Length: 282
Image (cartoon, rainbow, N blue to C red; front, top):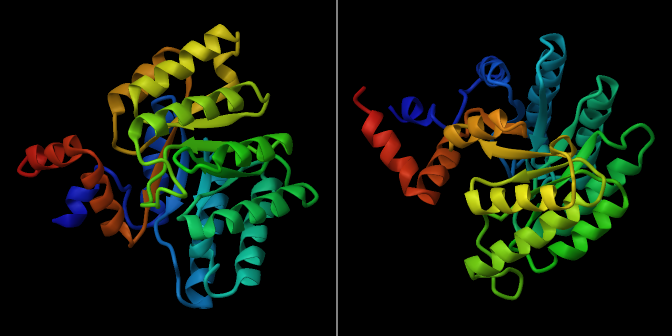
């Protein structure tokens, strides 16, 4: 029952499930970023297995001519087990993506991993042939994010801007929603004026409108950036943005670690829980 309920937010447990969902989203005029759910693996074998799934996904995306890239977490690639292993695994996937003109997004995790993740991305981006094929995620609720954004943008590194999902202390992160929103808008403006193609990841209509207004004010074309949203959340808004001519990328998760992801999606927005309950008996 849990798996059936989770299908609203998780494409399934296999690569094939995710590829089918990606094709359906592509057919609606939207691009995709796929994520094999999981993090904090405890041994090298798990990390290598995760990498093999991503490699297969990149192969199939290329073979089926899907408009999709991949997102991964470094702890899923073995960062806690052996940083050198994680870097080697991720390097291999970025090289594979570069060969087929695709892209790897390195997701951001909790604050203990922030600097390590940014260091990894910058090192990968500097390697021959990788520029433009690997990017980072910046969380607007972190106080350090403006400095990180300016540093990454100066190197031409693509960024996905989100608000942030981990519980952090007041010393590290803004606690008030108004402060987070204000920082999000400030960072969005830096990104849009950078000349680099970034992802504005939000379901908040006020943040979306602020992005549209700023782009219009600065005469920044809609093709210079994209909006990003989660699979199964605000499908109406996703389609509206497509109709308005904006790029929209849908983040599609899959894999056996669906349960914690599903529970987070229910917890973060009451409307998600209500949707599942209303449709449970259909």
